[in-house]
Structure formats: structure tokens, C-alpha cells
Length: 448
Ligand code: ATP
Ligand code: MG
Image (cartoon, rainbow, N blue to C red; front, side, top):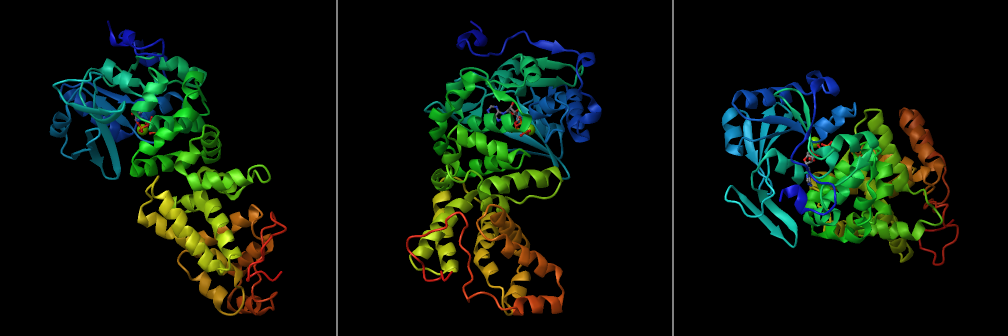
């Protein structure tokens, strides 16, 4: 019995692939990174098989610009290392060769096998989950180990053909994301595949095949088993791929978002019915627009957006209990962050600036004396101001406050002094959210 016959009726790899000749597809070497082409040729000239695989092939076939180029080969990691001087072996879970060309890294992976026990390497599986996978095999086996049919297409440097073991070309044409093998089993093996399904659906505008879609809500809790550091990387890919808003909506739809950001999900579930457009929606829309315009997006700002609803709600209740706005924000932030760290580990170089963005929010309320000018010189002013604009757009603070800061930045010394000398309403001129016209317990800082 072949491997393909072992599975259920699900999409499987066939041993006889469909070969799409050079003349019948649109991939040209001119569109592949020069360094990736170099790696492919070097491996071929050393007597190994070498293919471009994964997103590089998929995106080129779709006429999109690939994010990176991955290479698959029958050379073992040590053999790859011997071919290149600029090569490092990395990874424990998957042993990979990284070939370095300045800032570009071409990832070279040896074909993986399907066998559970094999003397050629080691694989560790626990509760159906693959923990370590260094068993090497043939290209057919490698194809079957990949996640989606459209990610299992190989571009062969030998004859420039595309090799298709899983009828990925048909799915590519029809815009369908289909896992290889039994979906539930594939999700169990690696729960991150659930996030990848949603990510590719959002990024490529594809639909998830119903059989792969069905298990998602029920299997979403498996994400809690994924290391928090890996989830950080995945979250960046989910929200920095240009389709953040759509991805966010899909993640919520499949109950995956709550696994990644439980406190935010909780906060949103309170507001959903009355106020479907929250700061998260606006912020993600904004992220997509910035990427579209080729402007930078920082993970700190992104996470500030993703966690804000939770922080804001808690800060609000602390203010109701009598804390000053700044104290309330600090208290709420540290609570939300320590809970969040259980799921996703945000490196300090991002979490510190993210906290600054939040901490600076109450300081925008002080518009008199020297304080506005001092705030302007804060290294995180710009990000915090952008965040304030989002809050104004989502009706959380008065637009007038945001406009004041917009004008204040444009003014020079004298103009700024005039603006900050103008009498303001009471000392605590904090405006409450328009969304909540009434509040039961008045906090000491409220004098409207
Ligand atoms: P992109 O780089 O555009 O995000 P990609 O498909 O290239 O998309 P990578 O994470 O670079 O994604 O992975 C390269 C290839 O490795 C994939 O196309 C897929 O074939 C395989 N792969 C990656 N992650 C998994 C996984 N969790 N399970 C099975 N195969 C995977
Ligand atoms: Mg890739």
C-alpha cells in the first residue's frame, strides 16, 4: 500500500506527480531572487536535487511577489553546509540550513520523510503533535508533509518545470486552501496550521475548503499548547501581511482570536452588539493602509492596538474605583500584559514601547502650561499621537482633542505657547467616551 492509500478519502499526495513544463507556467528565473537561484544551481552542480518550494512558488504562480524563497533538496543538512561557506545549520524542531547573503537568508530544507520510525533521523510525537522532525525522505514524502496543496508545488531547477504531487495547481486556480491529509489530524500535529489557513485565506483571498474549515472552532483551544514565542512570530505574520482586518475578522469567526488574545476577546464580546467598529478594527485598517502605502508598521503599535480594548476597559473600571487616569492605565496594562504573556511572548523591545504608547494617552489631556511641549519631545510621542488619532476615530475621545494636538505640532514656539495658555475647561478636562453617555459611579476625576 502506498502512503497515499493509507489516508482517508482526503486530499493526498500521489506518487505520480503532474509535471507542468516550463512553457506551461509563468515562473521565470528573472522573478526569483538572485540568491535563491544561486543556491539552487550550486546544489544542482554539486549533484543534488534542488527545488524552490512553498510560498515562493505559490506566489510566483499567482503573479504575486513572494515574501521569501525556500529551497528543498535531497542533500542532508551537513551536505548543504559543505556546499556553502555562508551557511549555518539552525533549528531543533526542524533542522534547516540557512544560506546567508547579506541580509537575505535562503532557507534550505532536506526532504522530510513520513515514516514514524526511521534510522535516518529522529522524530518526536506527543499526543499527535510533532515536537521534533528530523527524519529525511524522498520528495514525494516531503510533499505530503507540507500543509496545503498550494504549498506543495516544487519548481525544479533541473528543467524549470513545476512538480505537483497534490493537484495544488487546480486548487490554486480555484482559489481553495486545502490541507493535505485528514484536517483534524493535521491540526492536531501542528495547531499553528489553523492560523496558517486563516492567514493564507486573508492574504490570497482564497476560501478554506469546508472540510478544513469545519474543525476550526472546536480545535482552536489546541493553540494553548503552542509555545508562546512561536505564537508571537505567527501573530506578526497574521497582522503584518497586508490583510490584517480581514484576518482579524476571520480569526474571531473561527474562535481562534480568543485563544491568542483572551482578554481582548472578552472585552470585545461586551461591546460587539452596540459598537461593532472598535479601535481594533480602525487600527488594523490603518495597518493595512500603511503597508499598502509602503509605510513602516511596528509590532509595538500593532500590539498596542490589539490589546487596547482590554486595557481600556480595565483602566476605566480602576478609574471608577478612584485611581487617577495614569495610575489606572499602568495598573491595567501590567495586568493585561502579564496575562497575555501566558499566550504570546512579546519581546521587551516591543512591549516597552507599546506600554509607553498607552501610558502617554492620559498625558494628552494636559494641554496647559509647559506640559504639552514637554510631551512633544517624548521619544514615543509620534506613535502615541497616532494612537490618539485612532481613539478619536473610534469615538473614544473627542475629535477636538486630537485636532488640538495636530495643530499644536504645526505651530512654532509662540503659537504653541498661545495654545497652551488658552484657558481650558476645569483642571481635569478629561472627556468621557461618547459611547457611554451615562455612568453609574462617578469617579473623582470626572467633573463634567
Ligand atoms: P509565506 O512565506 O508567504 O508566509 P509560505 O507558504 O512560504 O508563506 P513558510 O512559513 O515560509 O510559508 O513555509 C514554507 C513552506 O513550508 C510552506 O509553503 C509549506 O509547504 C511548509 N510549511 C511551513 N509551515 C508548515 C507547517 N506548519 N506544516 C506543514 N508544512 C509547513
Ligand atoms: Mg515562505
